[in-house]
Image (cartoon, rainbow, N blue to C red):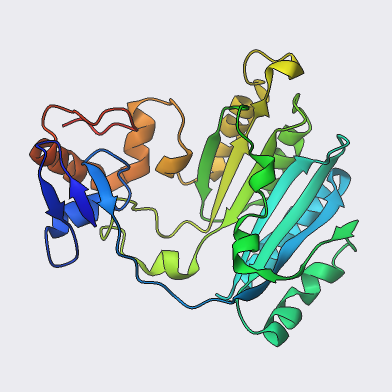
Length: 287
């Protein structure tokens, strides 16, 4: 990366040049400077993948999430899968599983067959598409000019108790735009050492993101308390860690939970590169 630090200097950060800065930039948001150029190592995909979603009624929500737990536990690294609790355009609560398979078409058909057969789903939108379309599958669910109040937690496993809490919590959503997303991690993410980048929580297998979303037209002036109540109910089953990109205005303790054992090292870097905390419009690491 090329980065401008608080002293106005343009620096290079890589595994061989300023490696400590390189460590911190990968996960500390804008705490250490402004990155002006990235150099990526890319991996060939597509151009066509098999992706999309299947939909089930929320009445089968626990069954869907238990299936999702089993399905992802056996997934190859060519398959990414996410579960979601959301509402249809006409307001019906639904349970969905989204998937993207980047391997050969024959392998995708075989691995996705159990997902297409389970239920069976009310709607099956799994199909070949450009990888860029797969990346944009849920963009329309997050338009500009909506209010958001996100809460998230990392999990080593999705227990039955956590699944029950997620489905029951979603039943109390007041806004038609609110949702819950469950991400499956592992794979290449888990093979990075916890102290190799600012993000240390490499062994968590799932993340649940509670996403109240509303507009002024819904008549809701603040997030419905269901989100905070659900997050609290999930904590006995969670790791206690956090992913910084999903944090809201939750205080210093939650920032520390995002960086875990790496926080002290990041604070040292902050003192070195930004001792006066110029870059503070972020999940702030105190110098």
